[in-house]
Length: 284
Image 1: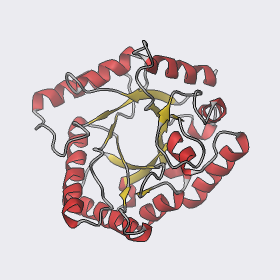
Image 2: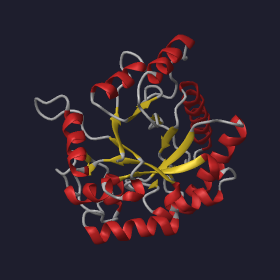
Image 3: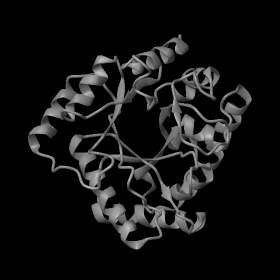
């Protein structure tokens, strides 16, 4: 069975993400290494890192994962922002390694009207610079599929395939597939034939061995809208079938699958429980 989890808050301390994941019966989880809307995070102190690692060691949680800051743009044509993004991304990796995380999910970047080809080249160069700056690091960086909103890259499998084929250290990188994003980008996973075609194309252009983790989100917006709006599972434009096929797909039986669905709905403040229950019922 796949490993189900959710993105958990670090409010009150990084270890709180672990406690929340356990409370909800997760097998895996995702968190931020710092405030995702700020360039710099507070300096990590040994005590909080050790508390996190000690807490994690007492659980059965697997594949602990972080998501990088939304401010980072490794495709930016603006040199100052580009270098600032590279520096910030290096820090994300350092923090991930200190916590002992397995994966760091990252949006590839937005070309800001410089064009897809130029943007992809910038991303490759940025990732090469990150690897050269840091040398060895343990966390694997997972480039996330995107909805293609604005000028964001990663909404076509060819984008990620190009990056992974051209970086100097491809073993440091993999892919995170977000169901809402690929659907909004135009890949119709909502029905059986489209699901099959989508993963055939993924395998042809990237390779299924590169797919390490899923973000499970339904979509508020229709197929091909190029708009990134997450919805509770089975309640959006994707519907039930795609998630049923995904959690029963033997190719992904050991993959971590992490919710990024809305945390609350009306009076309900614990919608992760409902979405996790939805997934577990689909498995059985």
